[in-house]
Amino acid sequence: MPKELRPVSPPGSAVLDPAHEGEIRGALGRIPKWDSDRPRPWSRRLLTLAAIMGPGLIVMVGDNDAGGVATYAQAGQDYGASLLWVLVLLIPTLIVAQEMVVRLGAVTGVGHARLIRERFGRFWAAFSVGDLFVLNFLTLVTEFIGVDLGLRYFGVPPLASVPIVAAGLLVMVATGSFHRWERFMFVFITTSLLMFPLAALSHPTAPAIITGITHPGVRGGFDATSVLFVIAVVGTTIAPWQLFFQQSNVIDKRITTRWLKYELADTSIGAVITTAGAAAIMVATAFAFSGTHLAGSFGSGLTVARGLQHTVGPASAAIFAVVLVNASVIGASAVTLSTSYAIADVFGMKHSLHRSVGDAKGFYLSFAAMIAVAAALVLIPSAPLGLITTGVQVLAGVLLPSAIVFLLLLCNDAEVLGPWVNSFRQNVAASVIVGVLVLLSLILTVTTVIPNMPLVPFTLVTAVLGGLALGALGLESRRRAGASERQRMVGADRQVWRMPPLNTLRPPVWSLGQKVAMYGLRGYLVLAVLVLGVKIGQLASGHSG
Image (cartoon, rainbow, N blue to C red; front, side):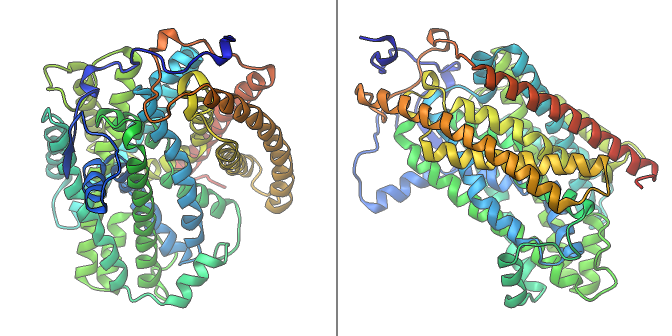
């Protein structure tokens, strides 16, 4: 039999930590190891979905973290309801990206960072995990900023609020029980639903909301500042840590291909809830501050709460402060765990919430160290916390294209996913997403270097060139889809196929075009990060002009 058509039902398993195998025990139910996704009545399906629910919902709601709440509040206060259309467009983007992550986790049983290292080498793993570590740490700092600002509204000083929340995060994670940690997270997810009464208290009007959804644009027109802010909204809604966290969390919950459709439902439900929550915050501040002297003068989460007290009432202000603190806790837990999962993946350490602290010292130590250092940084007097918050959201938008590219490459790797590789349509959708994200990142970089650059002509020319590149990617995707179909024809059972041990896989072979594109993307992203650093430095020194 030709080598490329060999049977694809390999013996053995690629799962690196034995704790990732066994029965599923979630916050809302359990599924025995011997159970299977056989035909079942709707009542049983709902119970199964309840047991599976968690990774998708947590990663999505966790994305409405402290930085997200601040960004959406600023969008409403400074731009009214004119940016609601951005959130609508991000729903399919979220689902497409996270569907690929879920599939990778369920099929391979190996974390995202480990797959990048084993399939692309230590050089690319160092860049990817290095990006992730820096971005996640800065994001964690913003979570403690959110804790400080939210509880300061109630008169709690940071020297009390930040250490208490940090200790609480450690207690939540170090229980040695996955389902207990998930139950903690579900409590915070339920609390996050306060976003919707927050929006109702501002008395929004349907026509303005519909206009904001159906008429793409920015109040005041597109310029360098508004484009930067749109990229920040994208960066806070779709962040690189989500890819690493959900894949590892799916594995840690022991979800396999038998339960894939339930986890995809979990992810889709989470995408809708998180986007609706983001819209609720945007609507709340848009209508609360419309026509007042506070419109267009966003300061911080604390000033938003105080402003809501003045324009709407103390109940609205208190709800916003609670939402901010709650979002900070969810985000801090998920973001830090994504880093701990990735570090343990790369260095081959035990990494499961099913394990006790003594049984997975490195995993829990990395979590505790990040929490402690980030919390301490927030307590430093005169630290530029506002700039850190803004910079993190934009940095996430800049680095996201690189993370999505690796995700796309892995989902087209037949050695990794076998009969589960991307279809042609999935590749086209993902390629379009990558193209749009790179375009936004490029606009950010160019407008920072050349503030007076005409945005419309530049965007049109760049979009045409990007379209040509996407066309080339489409041809490559068609070829890959054909290879995938040949694999299906040799009789692979998609419901039981899992990736064999990593050391048995044939190494990937990159074409010259792929090598040039990857090194070009990496070089550009390094330049974009440097430019962003210069911009943040100018803002910090008060010479942004």
